[in-house]
Length: 401
Image (tube, rainbow, N blue to C red; front, side, top):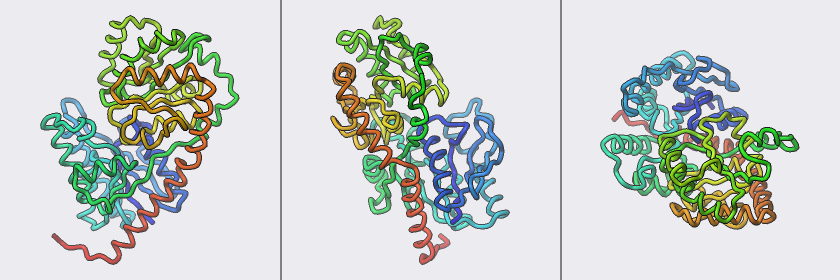
């Protein structure tokens, strides 16, 4: 089976869960015997072409983004993605289907679908409706929402990463539930297993004193991730557990605002905003942290929670979206009320003051991740969706209109 895949993100350009998902899924699909040709913008360098099993990664040079809003940038980038797709089909022959990851590549994906009469599979990683918490965010937000609807309409099948996302897509886009497949994100536990037994004490000293307990957040510093809720919870945590040290890793539009609020609360050296960190340091921080915290206000899945669980780090998450499906309260982690600093503080303090129970939950979480969220299993389920689409396309008449 040959699949043409389009994604806005792919290493070395990985901003969030979408890029990580595509990076892990594609080699696993290759192991399933799927020949993947991935077309992606060359945002952060990388070779114009590189092998991907029997397939290939094709990086396309992007336009100058200066002065362009995200919608205009996406449309212009899609012209180049579409052009590369046409060239590939002319040179390498037809593909059994096209797989688009989110709205940012919808324009090229839909054009290629109609030009070559290839069925389209769409993975919806998040929605503009969810990011805006159900409230319109202006003309740009409406345009993105409409593009997401269009992509789900054009798709033969829609893949969502959680039951929460499937229900959201069905509700806001009127997508039939029997058109949606729920396939979770995954994580490679070997990333963290290789750190077992390593002496990370000197690394840990870069972030906290030996007697301090690290409360770790990693992700984008944006409103929907609830980092502001974490900052508001910090004084209450410190009042109950003075040896806590907060390490907040990542970048985003709220960076300056969060730092200013931490200063206003007098947190001083009890909170460290690291800015950007490498993948290697991110994984090491999971291993040395005493608790990983993800207080999202909106979260379609929450792959960072899986990473923490794979690292055997106790987790505290807000009870929203996919996080509520991944973390079983009291068994594999603690769930707290969203947008509630008091509840979040309770979860953190409970984890730090009851390390025995936290360790038991962390071991159960690791076992669950290794069994249910591994990439071979996820790739096999994705390949089953592909096979269904190809089979149905073979017996369907493609109308010209």
